Image 1 (tube, rainbow, N blue to C red):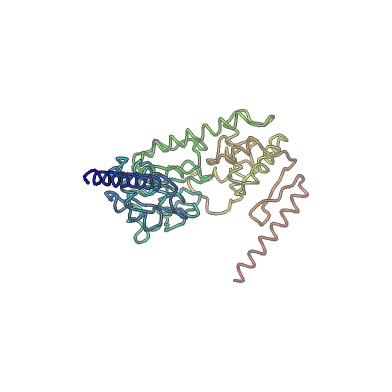
Image 2 (cartoon, rainbow, N blue to C red):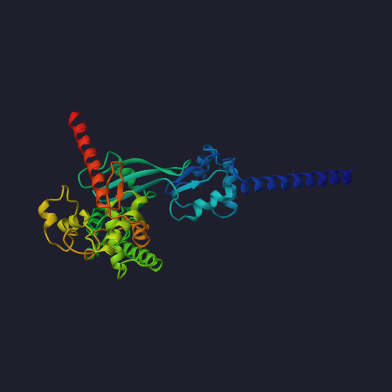
Length: 388
């Protein structure tokens, strides 16, 4: 009898152990296999938030099949108490194990909100935007001009969250003075700037920074980046260009940058000015004259006067021969590449064509016809504006 009882007990124990082993294997598979999330989501882990709170959010959003298994797996891997606050992009079908790894390893937030201080040619703006995880695109939440407007209601509360990333974006074609003034207005930065850097020496780009980052350190980074961009482009430049050194190429790039806002036109515009240099013609470009008037300190805000076009200054390319003494703005990488890899054309002239771009021509006769067309467009626009 006792032998039967023991035998039955052992059999039951084996069945239980086998079942338990199967359950453990199933739970492990659930933890490491692709998860049920159908569309990407943004998971925000608040400072001090518990693993239970995070697992509940994930279960509610359909990112995990079991909040219990999620917590158990994190505990087994000894990561349950290592949550790092931040906003995390969870891709479709991410496993529970991978999610635990994301939210316990820390590092920069990969989604959520971003505070952008944008330094532009015509002014600055502060922008709060949110990543749409399903498209990967940022959606604007709010914005304001720090020079003339107060932040919208609730803006600062949202922007001051600890997991909001901060970024400084410098637009192609701004001057060094504009960059310095802009960085002084960026309240989330700290420290002073050691004067205005040389024109053209700072790389327009988007720079992710931490709150309290040093302004001069950011200027130094911009300078290092521009130096590398110019050096690389100079080393791979086309043959036969009329530049004595990289600085002259940078000056040309800044003129190209200011002459067109159409990226595809940059190599064509560069070819016009290079052709003029090679023929001994004056460059005759308004942006250089404007720089001579403003010294890069903001925008002119009006048309050039005839007296300014006639006045002999180092930057008046209607008067001087060749290039001005230095850059007139900070050109982007594309403009630098255009100056060092221009199109091969016989163009000597260009004028606005009404579409946002320019009409190019090789002879003065063609150019005069294009100018006449542009003046007709301007006249029609003025008439339309006055009738409305």
